[in-house]
Length: 375
Image 1 (cartoon, rainbow, N blue to C red):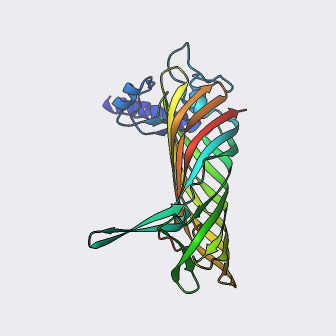
Image 2: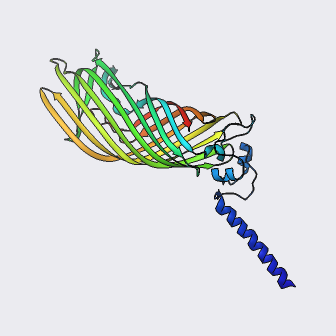
Image 3: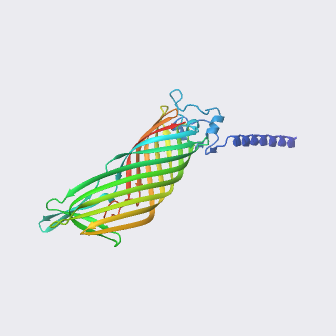
């Protein structure tokens, strides 16, 4: 009697386990919390869950909560639709983006203005640095990719930016105008006493990114995309400095430098988005890091004291890059409009100054507006 009951109980357990395995094979998903099937409808409910359940588009469709081609937007003016139906909806993705950046670097310093003041028994010397302040300029960034039903995607992005500026200064009364001249072949820097300086600088930025990403659904109102891929960058820098050398019998001097950097390497990062209620408005944050190998091709020419010198150098050095961005987005069906502020620091990049500048990092920061559409 007891043996028959035991056999029946074992058979029932086996049937239940087999059904569960068949269900798991049909709709694969990664589970990070208990098997509760209740949906997460608000940020408060999301915070109450110590663990999260990641859902795929296929699972959501199998449960009847969405169908391929469904519009992504607030349901009856309430709730969120950043869940599996929208965040993993497959299709071709294209975007165009307007950028407005500014270049910042200590390497933009091209000279020093020295003044001397006598205070009682002491002589005070003031040294003010002279730099070119490159203005904010508009740029463009475009992208094209494909999103798969499994929440994986492949995206190619291209960014272009160009800026230039010029300035001039003449030695004022009771002051000395100095210009640092870096002599890389000798490993030192010489301060040149000049009467007038006219400086021009240009910066050109071409960057391609090819990345593979995976979007994780953290609930009906939030998702997270992790990505990694390859970066290829071509950055050109040009400078031209000329003027008069000396005070009593001024002579003409001219310095030029052209640097082209071909960099390639790996890039990884993540972007999170949290929708605010049922308005279609969401906030997002993005961060990324790259480790690139930069090949520097530099040519410097100098006309000083009647002599002409040409110096060429090709070197390879590491170019780490750190990026961060934050902003607000608005989504309606297949259209997404986002805007925000971003910063990117390129280490070991700048080579503007004719002098030896210890801090040769370069910062790009500014605003952006993106228009994206999914087919």
